[in-house]
Image (tube, rainbow, N blue to C red; front, side, top):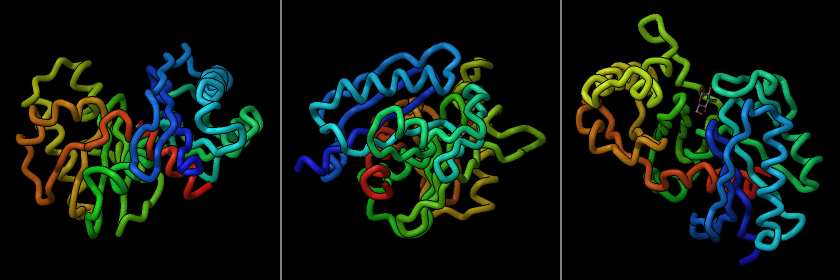
Length: 252
Ligand code: BGC
């Protein structure tokens, strides 16, 4: 059904990816296109790339259908409110209005982890799961998405919990493993500390781990000992695109 094919765009630190999404199936309806994130990643430079992606897929999704867009930051009523790993010019920027005007179609802006979480809860590792589900993405930073009965509590930002005097993501994100050249065992110790604190605060029934490193989940998830089951995300690097499109369709 044409109205079920919605464009999703995922803005990341190294690439901006987009694809039309079949929301009935929770799958990409065409191959995704990835364009490197411009140096500096200012709002204007990113908007140019987003416009290119929309143009590229306009035949598939039509000229006035909505588009969902993720950003790796807090999004409060369309306004970006943080910038842990992106240009500081985004803070306080009404990106929803800017993209809507630039693209000439309805836009829904959403935090990247919230988008990935929505995709996993509807179509992936969290489907049909009762109770409290927590998705975390382990990448440059740590993103989080928290659900109760499938409903999202947006912008939880659990990557920025202060643990042992540190911003948690600075020690436990996948980028920390690479930067400090940690073994899987060493990194797993940090993850153990991180998820233990999160568990003690939120008591999730299921923890889903996303981000590029979730492809290698076998190397570190079995090293963790937690109360809740902890499982890899299923939609991998398509989750952000799928969740962005879901938001555009369902939240508007
Ligand atoms: C940001 C979050 C984002 C996460 C993953 C964190 O540094 O504060 O908003 O979801 O990184 O990109």
